[in-house]
Image 1: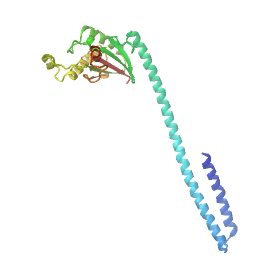
Image 2: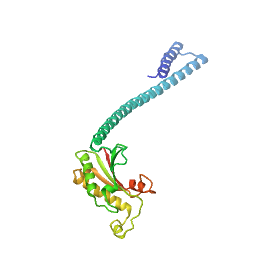
Image 3: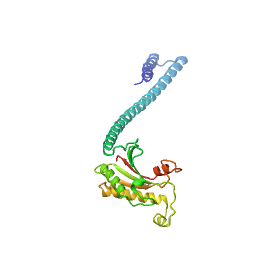
Length: 243
């Protein structure tokens, strides 16, 4: 119990017997002044009793709050422990992938396949030229090989897999290409994501874990004002996160 509550309760315990003793010692006093004094003391006692009740209610509320805070602290402690454990698993997973994809770490930006950490997981970034020809959603031989390697790293796991297609900002103008992708780069990027996801599933990645998205030119990694920037923007990203 907090000290200030103990002190106030002790004051109440002293005041109540004192007022009772005065009342008992005076009997049926006829002295108006004494009668008023007794009445005043009765009022003090009543006020102290009310204050005592309020203090006990405040104490009970404070004890409940302390108990709730302890429960929350334990919950947060458990969540922190779970977060640390998840981070350890992620670091171990990345170390495993470094062996399977040498040179594909976040620093390996010139690699056809790079691996980058994201919140709650990691992603594979595959350059578009490796996977598809210009204006096409048909996988090249190198593209099939690259996705096959990635599928090998994802098979038998429980992680969620999201395949996202991206393009540069060059519009589709050829009539034959426009006929295949009437909604332009957004259409092309989504179709490429679907094709890449299909190969992953054919290579053993469970379909229930896989989703797709197409972003067109709307999430560039670099400026589209240079050939090098456009090349970086043409890509497929495979985001991998724990369930």
